[in-house]
Amino acid sequence: MAAYQGVHRTPAGTNLTILALESGASVVGKIHQLIIGSVTAPADIATRLNALRHTTAGVGGTAAVEKPTDPQMPAASCNLRGGTMTEPTYEADFLLEMSVNQRATFTWNANPGKELRTTVGTANGIGVRSISSGGTPEIGCTLAFEE
Amino acid sequence: MFGDGKDTVRQPAGHIIVVGPEGPPVSYDTLQCVHCQAHWIIQPGSGRKRGWCLKCMGPLCGKADCMARCVPFEAKVHGEQPW
Image (cartoon, rainbow over all chains, first blue to last red; front, top):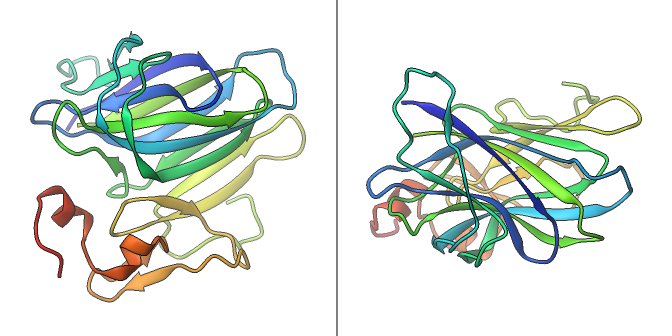
């Protein structure tokens, strides 16, 4: 099992994906850490973010580098896609909800065995999405996963 | 963690740490639904109705689908029939 991490920044808004982890054709990803903050000038702007499972991958966007935690590890089979993109098709129910003030830094860690696991197939994955925001602060998301 | 211990459980599934511009970092434990994998912050007195699956022996998030019948996440992934 190898660990990887990727980073991307995207302005928040209504239903905009910040960063999504897409499964490989035969490999699933397990998200064990999310770090969310903002690089925009500090202001009291609240953003509601959800981690959601998707069944159709996003189109376009920006490819985020899946950096192996151990440099000896092979390239990741899963794919990280950063916004702004043509949105994936998300399931209705969220896996994790985060309401974050722009001034704050939010970190979530899963205990071993309790990660958010994607289902196999390149269309499937889990995205971190801003559901609503009081403005358009640029949200930075670090996503760490294993596969 | 950093709190007064009311927002914790014996076997948490995860941890959240929020660092703001003022005051000390705030920490919460999370639990995970054994049917859908959702995590939630433990908030005693929130009024949210959660559950416990006696077949999976684990907590449930409270969503209708998860509460209605036992479909463990692994079974859902592999397309197995519900119990």
